[in-house]
Length: 234
Ligand code: SAM
Image 1 (cartoon, rainbow, N blue to C red):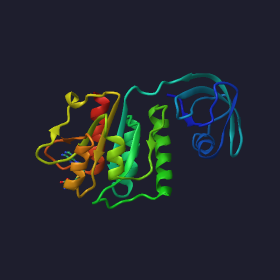
Image 2 (tube, rainbow, N blue to C red):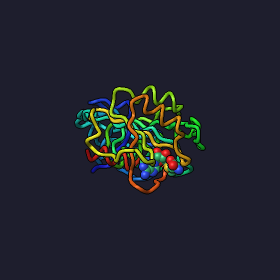
Image 3 (spheres, helix red, strand yellow):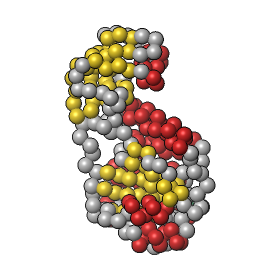
């Protein structure tokens, strides 16, 4: 795979200019030279092969050679998740992007401990871009604003295949037979202290099915990625 660069204002023909972090990556990290070919993507499905024309200190000009549109995946996986501590959230964002999650929604629940500020979310969006560059994904994973549990349940669960991960007796084991609507699958993962009974009841009322991921208690990010991997394999 050629080196890839994110350019939201990419067009199908003409000259493209890389600036900022992407130019830094091309010029100072990869030390790319005029004449080399790279791939550009706009994060919404447009991908182009481009030849480097001019490399300057802070920007580079590239000529678009050909472009194509990569259609959006037919399945949307939405992962609402409590936020794990420290670097573990960054790790979750990177791996969820690789596994094809369409939208990740950081949740605030009664027992949540971590509530990332908007500036932190901006940094996480850079992690999404880096994971798309590395994995060949052409549609960015959306990182939604932090959302309260009741809003998430009411907005996301109704009318779709919706699941709340809940390691308690009575939860069904996750399986493809539980998925009715394959075009959109919604998962929710709770905080280290788990969901409260009222939170589980609200989820069920809004249409979610409680599911188990086996007999062991998984960390937040392990549970989220296990669900994303199940959906990717269905
Ligand atoms: N003591 C908490 C409880 O009993 O719910 C454990 C919380 S666990 C560290 C964090 C979240 O990961 C849970 O709220 C749940 O959403 C998910 N989770 C972890 N292990 C799971 C399992 N075996 N089955 C289903 N969900 C699981």
